[in-house]
Length: 558
Image 1 (tube, rainbow, N blue to C red):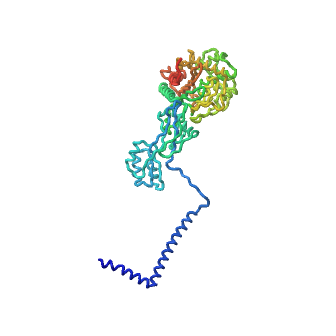
Image 2 (cartoon, one colour):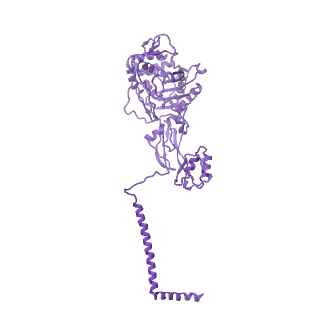
Image 3 (cartoon, rainbow, N blue to C red):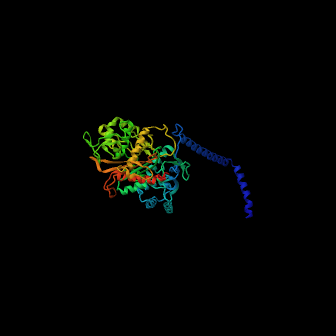
């Protein structure tokens, strides 16, 4: 072995000597080396030229491309009531998504997910998961931790989770119409939720990041809202009503402390807002409200100077205009003063007062009180009033006792607040800001007119003949007016289908709050003596609402 190793260098040296001695072989090596080098240069030159060509192809001007990151979500501010109690908030919840490029068995994935979500469209899911060009498909937002764990245990490649904001409502359906809804992207679509998007703003965040927005404080009082909804729910059962609505206002500021409508809506279920039966009976519908409109009629006559509380009208005969005859439900067979017309709720008397006032002044004063033009609040637009196409004598008379003009209850409540607060216009609001109106206080009726209306409303509750006596609450000086309006139907008004309402304010010596309750199509029951008029159903409901709400508002009985 040693000899072989020692002899190797000697042989190599011999080869080198032979190559050096052979000029032809050396020239061949040089030619091959040059050819290889040239080939490398040509290849790299071709690659460089192609890159330049592709870079310049079709680019006649600079372009920029922007995409939204797949992990971006929207975080919303909390909604709290006037006391700071939570009404709505965002939490982080798992969102199930898929990466079709990583899917191994699409059919198994569809089968497994259909077990977890039976309502899922299997054919559409298979089509989406089979698209290998897509890298992100959101399958379900806000799944529960238990559901997320179940899907995780399947061990299916291409399925994963990430946390995203989810809107939750800790009080369930309470104040659902006011709060509103959000869509699948956590953006507001109705109610206060939509107002937040339009005015306050929401915050774009990445998955797993919490927002920093300050809470939005609304005028609703959670305890008062519960009391109102609870009493309306009991009234629907007690009087077999088709639905109910109610609102409680601060008469000085227009702040809405409670607003309820039955059937209710759950803010967590946005599909309920598509059900016509669940539209808000406070803001989304307009109704002929019946005799509670007599408060407006008498206030207008006092304001115009065409009547005073002691003026007498001969209401013994029905009032006839064209083909129509207006009668009183319970005629007394004698002339009545304005006070008595209000207390006994005389349609004939209200019509005579309105005829003296005249159609032009009636419309002008209704406009002054804000009952002609549409309004809106932070909870959304309010349904526009429905006015008569022709405003003649017949319309003037029927509007006087609450028919022929339909208005949203919250709009009527705001107008009525001016009749008891000294005569100042208020606008219903749900945003607790404490700011004064931008245009300053606006007087719509004289203080003397407001004082007279407070007297009438209180008298209607304390008088043994008053239609509102069942609304009295000892110690709170309640005043109010009943209204029973027949609902229009095919071929005319339906006598057995009414909206029974009661307009109340308290304490009448210096009113702070206004309450309006409505019962839709209450039935004659044993408890009402077989009647459906507001004095036996809506009035006692209003009294129960006041008895519960007043202490919650810090008012002690006197």
